[in-house]
Length: 318
Ligand SMILES: [Mg+2]
Image 1 (cartoon, rainbow, N blue to C red):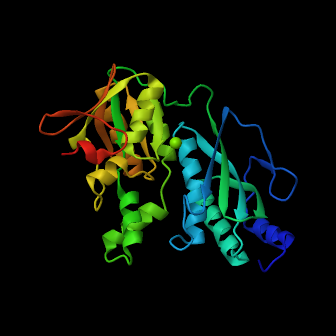
Image 2 (cartoon, rainbow, N blue to C red):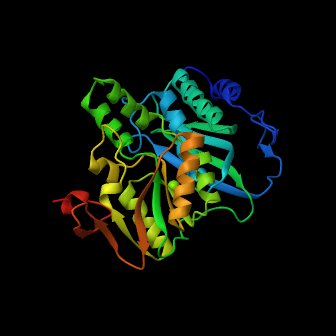
Image 3 (spheres, rainbow, N blue to C red):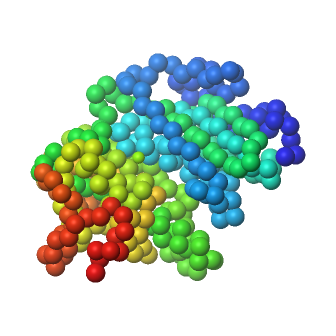
């Protein structure tokens, strides 16, 4: 490292953004102080480990910082809450330089700006491997948070946007140079995901009974929603919105899409939510299944039914 820890912390504090109206004391003191929030406080944290979640050979520091914020914002969004502030702690591997670290915080600040939250603190330490832990604090009106456990029999399962682009983007990075505009769009989906903050609040207003973000793949996350709700699901395979350039496998199991998976109580609710999402955000809403009493099944377009397996989609595709 070419700077002392204090020099680097001073530089990082200039990049942090503590100027929001709810921030009484921002970066640089022993702790940040936020004004009381109006509703309930929502807190989430996520850690990215070098060699497990990211590879510095494949990811720029700026993209990594950006994504480290967005994945947490997405979890806050999935409760139908609004992100307000974030803190970050990181350990830097031995060969990381100050420029890389500043780029990382630059990416965090960019994501914080785009998703309207404030970076109010950070800490760093040397270490044998790199990891980045981000905590995001948000707020939601009292009683309005949407858990993943509220799905009821007969609820319709919906998902925002399309699925599989992030996994396809990861495939493109591993294959080498992006060859087309489509490749570049897929890379962007992988490195620059979008958290669906406003969209989640639309789904909540239209009566979402359960909601979560799709971070680990549709089939796995859907099975988690069902387990939390004590219910089953019948997934309509032909209705799953597969992103352009992605395969069905990538849409079902790829992960990292950060779309919203939710259950709505009626066809009317789906229709009105779909209209509002399209008009306000230009984001489609697909109805992909129905909550049933028990069992996880997939209905294929040809009418066949098979068990839904959260992993190893290949085993039952044939
Ligand atoms: Mg989540």
